[in-house]
Length: 92
Image (cartoon, rainbow, N blue to C red; front, side, top):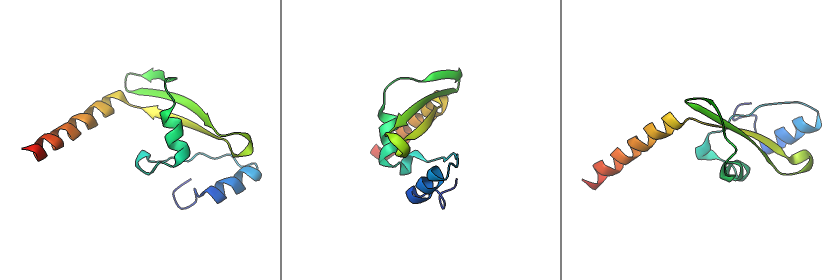
């Protein structure tokens, strides 16, 4: 689903209709449930050197959601270095 369709009401309607779907969400716009999934410690499985994933279920009953979180340690390191450089530039 894209942003325009992935409202809570559309997803609930799709669930009641038995529709299966995948929604991709950017972390910077993360909803409360996504933040809860991210906050759960551990559980990552290494797929490749640059890919770790974990499955997290948030909620109960028909409103529960399954999240597949992907983590790229190489990209995380690159982004941290960029942030550190920006901070250093600002401090100078």
